[in-house]
Length: 121
Image (cartoon, rainbow, N blue to C red):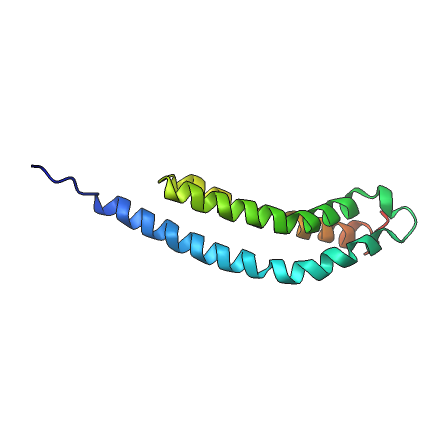
């Protein structure tokens, strides 16, 4: 009988992926809590005249509203892909919430720089 062993490199990649998924799950999961009050107040961003047509304001609000859903789906898919030994795809799906955060920050910076801090741009 021949024994099949998993190469040490694959074990290391799998362990690193597991650590990344655990850290990403904790960090992005904790960030859902402060996003909830921001989501409740996000409708107030459209109070100033003209802000309902402002693309940066709409982008910021959509990124805030979508964050909890994107996080739950991304982390869940990351763990599912990890269980199927698709380590790179697991890392990519678990990192999707970071894109959501970056989109919101870019929209906020755009409003700060080009709209003088106004939601109506």
